[in-house]
Every structure is written in structure tokens, then in C-alpha cells.
Image (cartoon, rainbow, N blue to C red):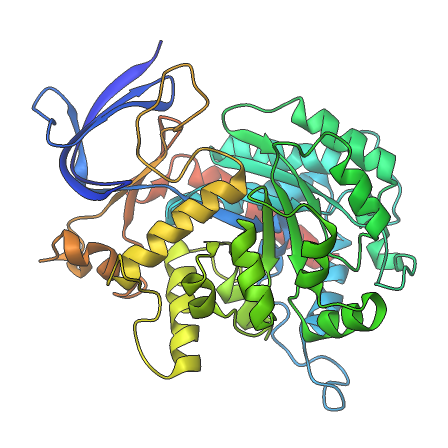
Length: 465
């Protein structure tokens, strides 16, 4: 039985910062967490220790196309660039990705996530088949490429195979470039069942419903009755674009979030990704459901989606987490910073993400995102907290910040997280542990050079196609 005893000068526990924290790890889980008890017999961790963050929304292959959709589309003088024109660029790029390319791109992305402080990623995976829609010899080849990439990098993975059946609310067939996303319902459920049989302490498998426009009501009902989601995470894109809201109103007679809440048992298993365009009633209903709002501020800004009503949602007691989605940025600091900044620009005043229990924007954002991310991942993460050795709880994921960084000079516990999030763009994460193993030391992933070399070769080959 592997074990370690560590000492943190300050650690962020469920109750906030504590000093001289004695941390015992057994078989990759926190088995002992005792503030005020660290002594010279424990291995020193560092001055500021945080739980690892969950990235609750990822499309891994899109990391390799970052920067390729920042030119005005042909014909944009007549119709403005939007999510829908960006989507055409994405479809063209996706058509070149196979299992080997996906594995190389995802491994590089996961290295970048770990170095930035993410220790678990929820992979919303819809790139299932060959570009013409036919299955690979192993129908799970693309899913397995993601599992292998996560194992290679050492990040925790919540794999969310995505159901994608129709091209719109009207039930139209998938377009030629969408065919590789599609499944027969029975084949999709078989895929999920197979992958769930592979679960480990660092692999969790749930389901993703691409969107209401891609999953007809009867298919949603079938998934919910399959027995595969009784205690598994369920994610869905929803209300990201005004066009989606208008189509849903026209063809289903309700706004997307209202429709979902009326027709599905939405609860803490669910993550509603984006949920940007909500009515006041939908804000309250989503908060009351216990589901997670999956917010991706850098991607939502890049696509011109709009701004989530954060203040009203927090006031209603809503749960949220963050994701990097299309990966034009891979940083929990930047996601949280721009979540707050977008609200400040909208409200034209400062310090939005605060509450009666916390006057600190940094503590509110980091703490809430830890909680919501852990819920969305379907794993017991998001806290440095002790657990029974044989339980499935409290995987030993943690970050050690660079206490020698100038940005943290002279900071006490009351200002540490505010300074971490709002002091610039230098990465202040020094060391990262996942399931009791060090994967990043002194800011560098243990296998960064080899994985980056393979990624460069892969992307250069794609550029020649």
C-alpha cells in the first residue's frame, strides 16, 4: 500500500485557508488532513496549496485549430461572422482528424491543462467515426484515443460520448460534414456501456446530449431510461445562441432551458453547458434544479455568444463550473477572471462575484468553480479532505503555487486567491499532483518535450493536407 505524509504551510480546505496542515495520502487518496498538526517528520509541500480544478467542458481536437478562425469569412460583409460561420471552419478541420491525430492533440492539450492547474477534464466527445460516417474497425477507436491521451498525460478524465442524431429542431438529417458525429441510438448506448466498464479512479464515463436540436425528445427519453445515467454525469449544450432559442420557441413552443426542465429529470447529475440566453424564470429554475451551469467565458467571448447572467444566478443559489471548450485559452485563471470581467463590463461596476459569506471575488470564484466542477465531473474532487482508504472519495489532487513569484509577494491568506486570479498572466502553478502522483514539477510536465514534439509533427502534417 503506497502512502505519503506531506506538510503544507497553508492549504485551502473546505472551510478555507488553514495553517500547518498535515496531509496523509494512501493509495492516491487523501486519508488524513489535519490543520495545525504538520511537523518536521512530514515532507514539505510548499507555502500555498490548493485543490486541483476541474475543466468541465472540452472538445480536445479544437486545440489544434486555435487561431484558424480569426479571419473574416467569405461573404461576411453581407452576413456577419458568428458561431455559425465559425462552425464551418471547425467542420472542415474536424474532417482531417483520426484516432492517431486525436491522441496526439489531446495529450498535448492535457499537458497544458495540468501545467495550468486543471487536474480533471470533462471531454464532450462527438468525433466518433470516419469523415464519411462509417465506423472504424473498432467503433470506440476515437473514444479510446482520448482515454489513452489522458492516461499518458496523467490527468483525470470524465469521458462524455455524445449523442448526435439530427441536424435541427425540425428533425432534418445530419449534413455531410456532421455524419461522423452521428450514431444509431442502440450503437450509442452500446458504446457508453462498454466505456463505463473501463472506469477507474481517474476515468469516469457519463453521457452528453449534443443539444436539443440534435437529440429528439424520444431519444432523450430513451437515454434517461437506459439505466446508464442513474448515477452518471449528463451534459448538454443549451441556449448558447439566440438562433437556438428562437428555433426552440418556434418548433417546441418553449425556450430551451424551460423545455428541458419541463421534459427531463434535471438534477445534480446534469451540466447545462453555456446556458447563456436565459429568461429571469429560467435563471431561477436552473438554480433550483441543482444542476451545474457550465460556463466557458473565453470561448463564449471568442464566438460572440453573449454573457451569462452570473449575479442573478448566484443570488438564486445556482451552481457553476468552468471549461475551456474550444481551447483558445487553457487557463482556469483566465476563465475565472473573464467571467468576472464580463459581468463588470455589463454592470459597469466592480466586484460582482461576492456574497454575504465572502467579500473576496477570488475566493468566491475559485471555491464555487471547485464545487461545481467536481459535481459536473461525477467525481469526488474539488477539496483537500480526508476519506476512508477504501472509499471512492477524495482523490489526492492538489496544486502548489509558486510562493517566490513576485505577484504573490507580501500576500496573506485573505488576499492570496484574489492575487492569484487578478495579478497578470504569469502561470503561478509550480507543482501539480493527480491521484497522489506528481505530474508537474517546477511548472513543467514530466513528459512535456516528447508529447509536444509528437503534437508538432501531427499538426504540421495536418497543415499539409
